[in-house]
Structure formats: structure tokens, C-alpha cells
Length: 261
Image (cartoon, rainbow, N blue to C red; front, side):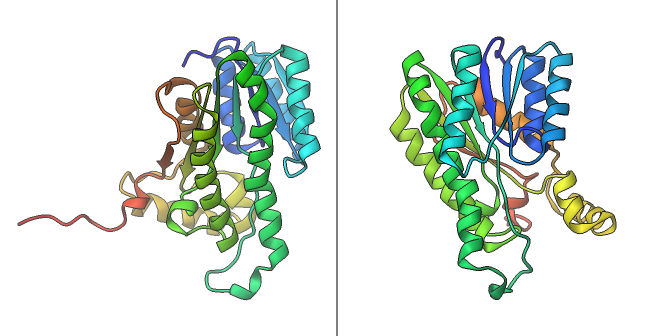
């Protein structure tokens, strides 16, 4: 991963996959703008951890659902370092809804989830695109989800938003080529505080054990697993654009394969 002196913006960069990606980029010598919406303490801690690795950082508060915040995040990054080489659209939200409970989601729930997961990624891409075009290259990775491929996950609204993100990834890859590559990762289950906070320790442990016992690789994905996939697309895959890379331990493969006898 050749990222020395790269400038990369990570939305939702204070926790989870975003924080893991920031630390990996820091180890490679990149300069990282870490955006957060509410997790100020975690974003500062991630920035400090990156700086201990020798990286320069910028911490930017902002809600990607607000276009003015997106433009400001990019403007602050360019003002500090003069360029943007990479963007990781990692900020996201959801609503945990029991399967089959159609009454649990309102139109406002859909609009809120879409405003962050889809519109936010679009607005951030729009804000960085002129800078990347002007410098002749750039790379964007969207954090989608297996939910957008299989129609599963925390809620129908979330799955629908990630399906929209996948389609948007294809559209933007066509539109922004050849200077800018646009790809996405589609994580499956990810260990960490998001599910733990929502389920509690006992239910969370059961979910992790269930994933480990059911997916082909017998592994519950970590933030580092997903960050590794994202940074491959962001920095290493120079001939790849419009790709949606699934990282779910093989969960999308479904049941046991048919075997000729």
C-alpha cells in the first residue's frame, strides 16, 4: 500500500471501520482528515493514535447529510494540505427493526437513513471531485453492506439505502472516470461496539458465536478486516473501478454447494 503523503478524508472516521482504516493509513505515512458527527472523543483518540504513528491529522466535525458540512470538510482538508487523494465514505446510520415488523418504519425513518447513507456519500463525492479532477487522479471507496446485496440486515430501510449506494457507486464510477476511481466494500457482520451497544453483551456474544459457526470461513469480521478491503480498493487497485467487494466470510454463498456424485 503506497500512501506516503497521500491526503485521505474518512467520514465516520472516529470509530469502527473508519478508525481502523485511519490507523492503517497512518502506518503508511498518509495524512488523514477524520470526520465525525457525534463521536468527538473517539475521533480525537483516533487522531492521537495516528499521530503517534507519525501521521498528520485533521479532525472535522460535520453531518454528511448537510451539504454545507460536506463542502466545509473538504475545504478544511484542502486548506491544510492542498489536495485530496482519497475519500472513504464511511459515515452511516440505521434503525434496528425486528424482521417482519413493517409498522416499525416510517417515511421519516427512510429519509433519515437515506440522507446519511446515500445523500451524504453523494455530497462528499461531489465536494471532492473537482479537486481530484484538477490534480488528475483520485480514489473513492464507499462503505456499503451485504444488506444492499442480499436484502438482509438491521432494517429494510438500511438494506434499501445500501442497495442505492451500490447503484450510485456504479453511476459515479462511469461519470468520474478516468481520473477518479469509485468502488465500494460490502461488509457482512462486523464485531465491535455498534452491535454490542444495541444488543447487550450476552446477545452480542451469541451473535458472534452464531456467525463464526455458520459462515464458510468460520470468522466474524472485524473492523480491521473491512478496513483492509477498503484500503485495497482505495490505494492498490489501480485498474479497478465500479466494483463492489463483499467481505462477509462467505455468508453470501448461502447453503452447502451442490456436489456431483
